[in-house]
Image 1 (spheres, rainbow, N blue to C red):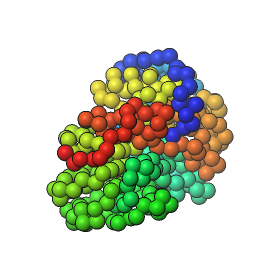
Image 2: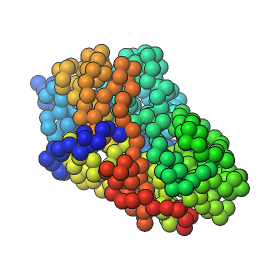
Image 3: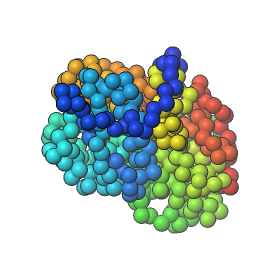
Image 4: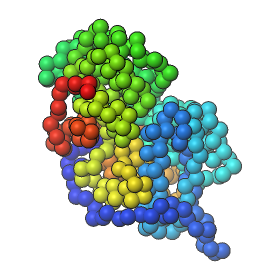
Length: 395
């Protein structure tokens, strides 16, 4: 994530409670300026919905706060979004509609690198400066995709603390798994390279699809008997692997999975099997970043649940987009893009700065662990809420 001094900086005063009604701007008066319309799609349904729903709620909370303070350029903000059903093809059709039929003023990207890769050619065709709260794979942010603008840590940093930690506590062998999706494969290959660099013996490695039956994989892991099992996953497959390992009666000393463990649904689905599993996060409740307390209070009041890092990334996208619109006094896409890649925004996640290709620099994912049903930040040590607990017991 951001540098430690930035995260430990002064908090903005706040704790504002924002009503859900604030999301919807009233029709403009006859002589009033029309609203600024932000368009997006989200995985409300489908395989990625568990995480996608957090992201859209974070976006809504950001829009609501902006409207509470008068909107941008003296105009209210309206959010227009569609359910892309976790489908890249559906998202492409819907972004085409947002740009050509709905004629939105601004865009925010969808959830997941998988879907974002599909819409990138369209975004660049129409030259829309698009904030990407849910797309972490570095290969998106290249010269040919100059209009995609990252606002989260990239996927090569997910669970980067786990293997060094495990080795420090005696681990010698590892099993590494990756979902066959752009973000998770980037994470997977980064962790394979890291394991080799650390001198850990990789006794089992595989990639898989969301439709995979994990029974045979869990059996193979049991036979390999690794000290560490690390899976680069989304929510559904993270749950399925834990269940399969339990059915085989195998519990590694260290078990870490990306994405899934940060969701409340993960603990609900797995119960005590979730205890001592490690996960990743790009934001946390104790970050002393500008507006973090306001975000937490607003989100909790609006949605009657605690946010996760996907929600924080969605909220940050609105923070960055708003900063660019206000600074340039414009909705001109080229001006907005240029401002974003030449300035740093102090967001709730920490400083967001994109390089010339739109890739966020300096941000990394931190590490959490489920301890007695509660997520605790355990790395970096300077921000940790609790010491690491091990071994994973599988019950």
